[in-house]
Length: 96
Image (cartoon, rainbow, N blue to C red; front, side):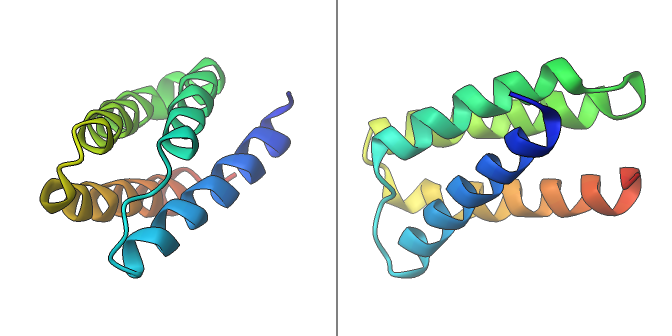
């Protein structure tokens, strides 16, 4: 999968995850698992310049996965917010 396709698929999954949480629902576990897999692939594309942010994002994605697995909905909302903040920072700072 090329970088543009990977980024597009990540964006679609993250939108699906955010939409579920906006409705007060927990996202589908399968969606979060796929999101984490794609985040892991994204790390392979990380230049040294933004590798730290990619690692941080991966850590947050893994935390979200554990939170969804444990059905800990209270911790899910701030993690999704943190993922969005991290993504926005990275896109703003390292946009090509």
